[in-house]
Amino acid sequence: MRKIILFIAMSLDGYIADDAGNVDWLTGQNNAVETVNSYADFEKKVDTVVMGWTTYHQIITKLSPKQWIYENLQSYIITHKECASTSNITFISVDPCLLVNELKRKEGKDIWICGGSDIICQLMRQNLIDTYYISIIPTILGSGKRLFNTVEQEIKLRLVSAQNNNGIMELIYHKR
Image (cartoon, rainbow, N blue to C red; front, side):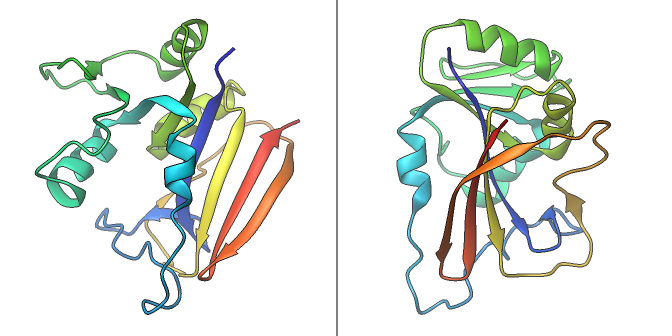
C-alpha cells in the first residue's frame, strides 16, 4: 500500500513560514556552499502531492509563478475556492483524511503531504502520516506559522536517518 509522507522544512523553533507567510529564509548556513538536493531523490518515490490553498498560492505567486513546479506529479489542492482543475491539478473541497485514505487505496507511488500545517495536523490526529522528512533550517524566526499546532495524542516515531547538509539537519522518522 502507498505510504503517506510529510516532506517539509521548518526553522529551528518550529515554523514553516514567517509572519508574512514568506519562506525566503529556507537556506543553509553558508550561501557559498552548495546544498545537496535531497528533494530530487525524494521526488522519485512519489507520484502524488497534496497541499492546501495557501501553499499552492505561494507556489504560483512567489516561488514559481511561470510554471507549475510539480507538473510530473498528480496534485490535489484542498480548498473551498472554486477553481478549474486541469489534467494534473485537482482542486477539491474534502476532508484531507478522507482524500488520503482514498488515494492510499489506488495504485501508484507514495503520496507527499506538502503543506500546510492545518492539513498536516488533521492527518496527524488520525495517525495517517507514515514517514516524516523534516529539514531543520539553521534559523530561529521567533514567530510565524507553526508546523505542529496542537496534537491531541502522542505520536511515537523512530529515527531512521539524520544528515547535516550545509547546516540543515535532514531528519527522517517512521511512525512506530
